[in-house]
Length: 59
Image 1 (cartoon, rainbow, N blue to C red):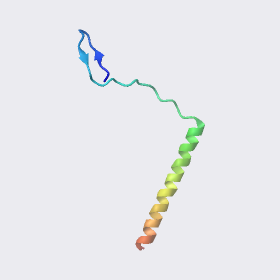
Image 2: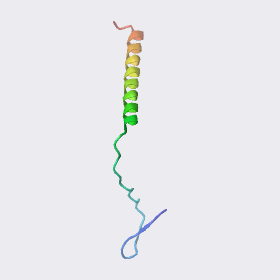
Image 3: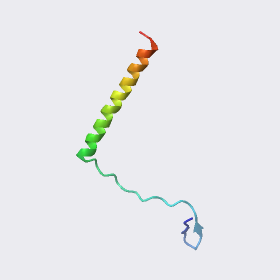
Image 4: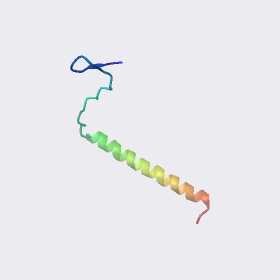
């Protein structure tokens, strides 16, 4: 287990904080993929709702 040493030589075995970084903006290919996945998810959920209502017999 990694330890850090504080001033005075005391050991500290608390978790180390991860390095912070700034996210990069999406490129055009990633944006297109997110749009495609959003449309596919919407169609899937709509289809599942349609099937659920059609087999339930509620009119």
